Length: 122
Image (tube, rainbow, N blue to C red):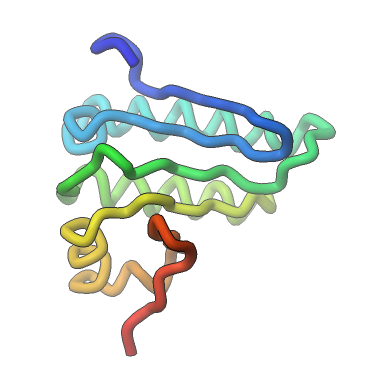
C-alpha cells in the first residue's frame, strides 16, 4: 500500500478484506475518505450478485485508534448494517481492543483476533 493509497482491497473467493494504515484511520481527513470508499464498497457488495455478504477490516497494522477512527467506524458499521453487509474487524491488537472495551464499542462490532472471535466483556 503506497502513501497515496488509503485502502488496500483484496477479494479472495467469497471474502473481501480491506486494510489501511494507522496514520490514515487516525487522521480526520483521511478517516473520512476511508469511510466514503468503504461506503462505496458496501453499496457495491449489495448491488452486485456477489458471493460475499461480509467485509473484513484487517487491523493487523493498527496499534492505536483515536476518536476520528472510532467515529468513522461507527458510521461504516451503520452503513453496512443498513445494506445487509456484515462487518468483521480482524487481527485487532490488544491496545485497540482495550479502547473498544473502554468505550463499550466491542458490543457493536464483531471482532476476531488471530485465533478467531474475541469474547466480549461483561
